[in-house]
Image (tube, rainbow, N blue to C red; front, side, top):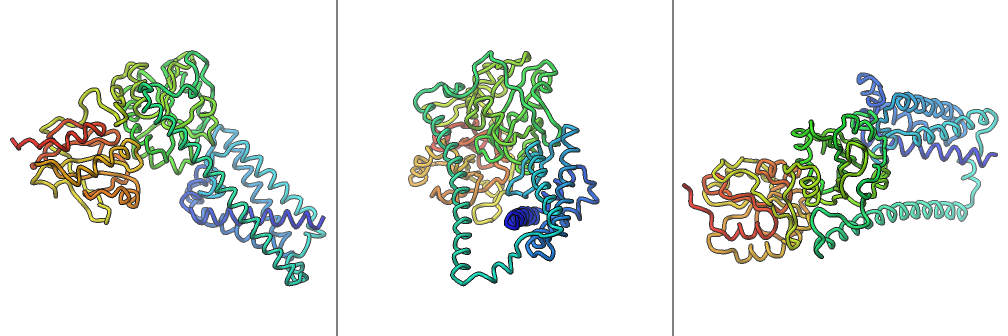
Amino acid sequence: MDIILLVIRLLLSAVFLVAGIAKLGDLTGSRQALRDFGVPALVAQPAGVLLPLTELAVAVALIPTISTWWAAVVSLGLFLLFVAGISYNLARGRTPDCHCFGQLHSTPAGPSTLIRNLVLAALAASLVVLGRKSVGIDLFGWFGQLSLRDLLELIGTMMGLVALSVTLWLLFHVLRQQGRLLLRLEAMEAGLTGTPSGTSLPTAGLPVGVPAPSFRLPDMAGATRTLEDLLALGKPVLLLFASPNCGPCEAIFPEMSRLQRDHAKELTVAVISQGSKQANQKKVAVHGMAQVLLQEKYEVQTAYQVTGTPSLVLIRPDGTIGSRLAQGADAIRGILGSSTGFPVLAGSSSRNGHGPQAASPTGLAPGAQAPDFSLPDLSGKTVRLSDWLGSPTLLLFWRPGCGYCQRMLPALQAWEADPPSHAPRLLLISSESVQANQAMGLHSPIVLDPSGMSVGMKYGATGTPMAVLVDAEGRVASELATGAEAVLALAGVQAPSPA
C-alpha cells in the first residue's frame, strides 16, 4: 500500500507541476479561461496568477510526508472545483477552452475533460482517506538509504524514461506532420498530372447525395452549435475546413469572409477549424470571420473524409451532401462558382502547374491611386510605397511556403540576374519568418506583412503569387497578374509612360 500511495503522490505532484508552470507561461490565456468558465473579470485577474501558484505549492507539498496530507486535501478541493466548473458549463451547452495545461494542451472542455478531473479527484480522495494513518514511503528517507551505485542507477533510469517519453512525443508529432505533407504532395501531384481544377482526390470526401454527418461543436464564444442549427434557416450550408497554421487557408479566408457578409441571405458559411480558441482568435479578428467552430481533434474532418486544409463541401438544405469535396483555394473557388452560383469566388483555375490563373481581371483598375503602406523589411527598417515613387515598381505578393511560389523561384532568380531592358523595380510583399525569406536567395527588397495579406487585399490580391505594376507617379498601371506566367510576363513589360 505504501508504494501505491507514493505513486499517487508522485503522479498528482507531476500533474500540478506541469499545469502550474504551463499556466504561468501563459497568464493571459489562464485569465481568459477563467472568464470563459464564468468567473467574473474582477476575480479572474488575480485568480489567473493565484491558481498556478497554488498548483505549484501543492506539487511541492505532496512530496514530503509531513505536508502530504494537507496538500492532498487542497488538491482534492481544486479537482472538485474544476469538476463543478466543467459540469456547470456542460450542463448549459457551453464548452469553453479548459486551458488546463496552458498552451501545452488546451482544448474545449468536454466529457473527457470531466472524466479526467474525476479520476484525479478520486486519487486525491484516496490519499486524503488513507493518508490519515500513512501517506506512504518517505521519499527523502528512502533516498538516504540508497547506496551511491543504487542512486546513480535510479537517476539513470529516470533520465532514460524521460528521454524515451520525449522521443516518442516528438516521433508522434513528426509522423503526424509528415502525413499532412504527404497528403498535400498528393494533391499537388494530382494537379500536375492533369486533375481538373475544382475536383478532389478520389479517396477524399463523401459522395454527393448521402446524408451529411451531424456534429456538435463549440463556437468561439463557447456556445454549442450543431449541423442542424446551421440548416435550421433552410439555406445551403458551406463548410470550410481550415486550420490557424495553414498557409493556403490564408489565401481563401478574405474571400470566405466576404461571402459571409455579402450573401448571408442566400447561404450559411461556417468554418470548422482545428486548434485552441487562442490560436484561432487572431485569424478570426484579422479576416472578420464569423461562424468559426472548433473541433477537439479531427473528428469532424474524419467524418467528412477530409484529408487536408483548406477543404470545402456544400450541404443542401435537406441535409445531404451537395458537392464533391474541394481541396485547395483554386478548387474551392471553382466549386463555389459551379455548385452555388456565386461567381464572386469563381474563375480561378490552375494552368500548367504555374499557379492560379484569373478568369477575369480583379484588383484595382489601372489609373487608380495605389494604396500606400508601411511595412518592415528583413532588417527591420520601415519601407513605404511612397518611398519608391519616381520609377515603375512591380509589387509581388509572395509567400515562401507557397508551392506555386517555390516553382516560380528559379525563374525569378534568373530575372533578377539578367532583367529585361526597362524592367520595373521589384518589391516583394511577403509573410512568414525573416529566415524563410532570406533562404530564398533573392536580392530584391522584401517587406513583411505580419497579417499575411492585409496589403494584398487592398490591391485585390487573394493569394500568391500575384503582382501589380505601379507607375512612377504611384498609380496602378496594370491589371492584377495571377500566377507565375502572368507575373513574369508583367515583370518583362515596360511600364507605361505616365499620362
